[in-house]
Image 1 (cartoon, rainbow, N blue to C red):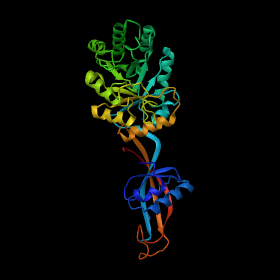
Image 2: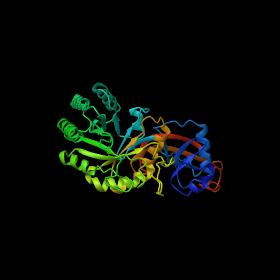
Image 3: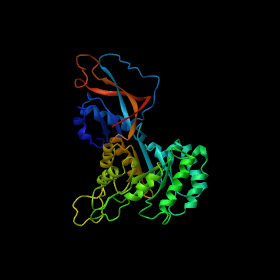
Image 4: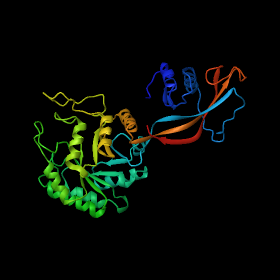
Length: 377
């Protein structure tokens, strides 16, 4: 609803909604009483005036019927916070933890490395106001001793809420001893932090189909039976020839049930502008689902924990667009700043000045009141 042109002011004037002002680049929740001409005046005023914050004058100062005052809200771009009860995580190497928080992420991925580098990254995230319970530590791909060292080397006051192993079955992580090493790591995790979870990702459907010949359902179920803190995440960004990604999420959730509480999206694959290119001869449906469809699927299956893979893409604009999609689907709230606007009429009498359409009205003053709020879409 943001990207509207100036000529669309009149259509938006009948609604109490968000309007994008192209001259100033600002977005405001405006009163339905504004005319198209008055909306254009607001845009012109905002484009040439620096709006100051005045906290001492927040009471309308009406002199006569030729004055009008309004409270509106300016929508701040890229200033989000996660909706209570929702969890949004990110893997990213070009945004600082503080920037990630501003985009509405309350969970952060800690890359694999030495015990010291992992502990340092955890401390940086905590200093940026991430909760340690919302950090996910990558345990690596093949060195079980190093994974154990990471788990045991984290101070008790900084123990994360999640650990992660990427696609253990597809890529035979830790060699042929997956079903031995992973339960051992899961037990080590729960002994250090009983509430911590070990997430294992997978891109393979949990049953055999004509274009899906691998089936790791039995392997996952065996691990689930050994440790209650082991969970699975779908990371099939473009899906495959069988289903779009939303269909994958549905199949994973039906198969894994309570062990599928979180899934992955991609900042590049699922962005809605680059459809999947996976070869699907004979299959007419698309293989990639966009962010909004996947958020809708998450809401439909009751999933409140989503992770975004944005590593080595360098695309901050795409992360911003993802945050907007998260906002429109109820996963984050957007910051709004209250704006106080004073209008005056050039004809200083009650006969010729009737708001909003009689008389010539102009903006006399506009300022922030210092009041802010986070709101849903």
